[in-house]
Structures are given as C-alpha cells and as structure tokens.
Amino acid sequence: MDKHELRILLLTGILLGTFLFAVLYAANKKNIDVPACIPYSGAFKEPHIRPLDKNTYEVFCVAKMWAFEPSEITIPAGSEVDFYLTSTDVVHGFHIAKKDVNMMAVYGGINKTTVKFNEPGVYKIICHEYCGAGHQNMMAEVIVNRKPINTNQ
Ligand code: CUA
Image 1 (tube, protein in one colour):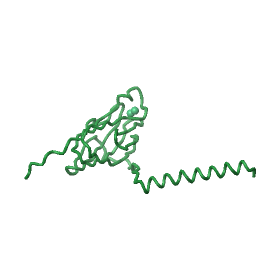
Image 2 (tube, helix red, strand yellow):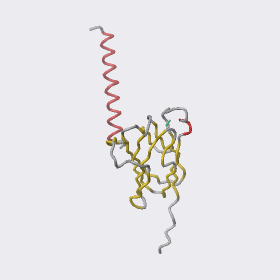
Image 3 (spheres, helix red, strand yellow):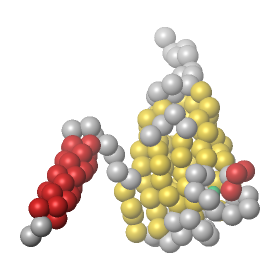
Image 4 (cartoon, rainbow, N blue to C red):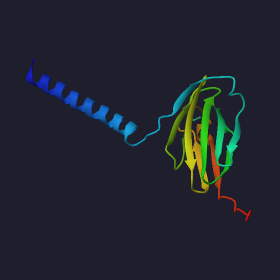
C-alpha cells in the first residue's frame, strides 16, 4: 500500500473516531435531548393544548401550508410543555427562538420534544424548512406569562 493511501486511511480513522466520540459525548454527558419519533395514531386528530396540571402542558401542533395550529400557546412561567408535532402536507420546520428546539413536521409521523419555559416572554415558533410560497410567513408564538400572584394566604 502506498504511504499516502495509508496516511489518508489513518486520517479518516481519526476523524471518524473524533466524530463518534463527539456524538456519544453530547448524548451522554451533555444530556442533549434527541426528539422522539412516535408512530402516527388516531389520538392525534385536532390541534389543541391540554393542561395536565397548572405547570405541565401537552401541545398537539399541526403544521400545514402555511401556518401552525394552534398559532398561539399561552402558559404561565415555569411550565413544562410536551410538543407533539405533525404535518398535513409537506415537510415543515419547527424552531422555537431562544430554545434548543429544532424539529421537523412530517406527514404521517409525530415528533415529540419537551421544553421548559422558565422566563416570561414571547417565544416565536418559526418554520425553518423551505416549504413553498408562504414559507416566510409561517410562524406561531408561545406566550409565557408571569406566574399569577398567589392570593391564598
Ligand atoms: Cu413550513 Cu417553511
């Protein structure tokens, strides 16, 4: 074997090892949450927000040309939200500004991720996958309100 071929092979091996190490390190040590992919079921019919308790919500979000439904999600600060996401047509993106959320909405499939909203504010959800003529207008909002003042003394 030529010595240059050997060098290329060695370099490829080192790069591959580094890449594998980086992926495993991110998944195990940094607790990077990989969105789950759930088989499509009849339970996911209409877009809706379902409170499980006063700080936990499920959002069943449908992406379609060119909107997200529901388009406005209002929750109190400190809430944890499970987003279930699907599409009724083409592939759409689902990015929540200021949060590490980067999901795809895929026809016939459901992706799920969990996000905690501690800080009050408005978090834009945008489609970051080109999906046609109205792509740039495809957005929604998560409105995180301050916690209500507890008046029960
Ligand atoms: Cu939906 Cu771009």
